Length: 115
Image 1 (cartoon, rainbow, N blue to C red):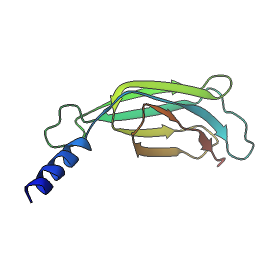
Image 2: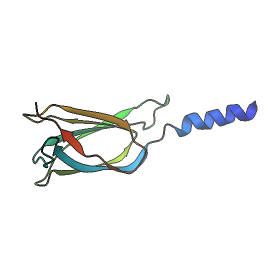
Image 3: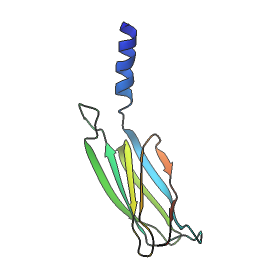
């Protein structure tokens, strides 16, 4: 029984770890035409555990990037555990996405649908 408690203790604290040097990159694409969309603002909010005593997110950082002439974007954070992505572009439906971060390098292509 003692070993089960020790195992659960380590399991609980190993799940609340920030990933260091997190990067997201990808392309914003028109869903119907499969063309890249240029000059789109992509809003990233990266949540971090930091020094949280209760395993909750204790801080966040928001970075807004713009797609280039090929629809590409890239953003980096020093560390993170959870990401929220939002995109709003006139003529398109809004895009919202969120997920836990497990890897340093992440690829995320964003497909926007026309209104």
